[in-house]
Length: 140
Image 1 (cartoon, rainbow, N blue to C red):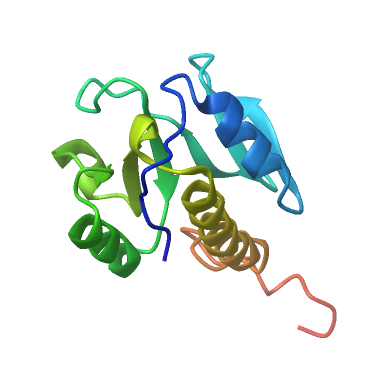
Image 2: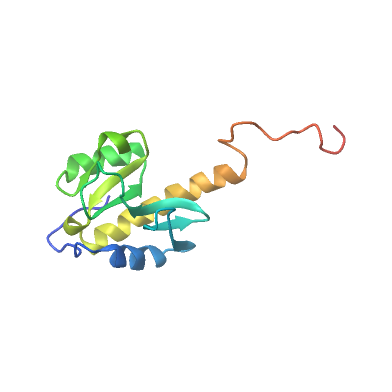
């Protein structure tokens, strides 16, 4: 599990986030509709700068498993947090000024794995509102 430590990232740490994320296979950096930077894997959100007013300045929002989020919040509440707005989503907020580079890399690697699983389910049609029409298959 990623841990916070004594050596933290600079407050304007998206450059460090980008570097750590791009070191992972298949991860690319793009921008959201509002122009804020984010990391994606196969078009699926992985991490980005938190833009909702409920988040504190210079915070990163990262896709995580809800169980993992609970562990992060319990282990390092000064580094990881969640607001009511983000609580319903499988993400955690990170104070960039309070996370060390190695912990950030581990957190992004975890996020990449979770995002790859989501992307795989999406490609197979799971999670879609309506299942694909099977009546048009040959022999049906």
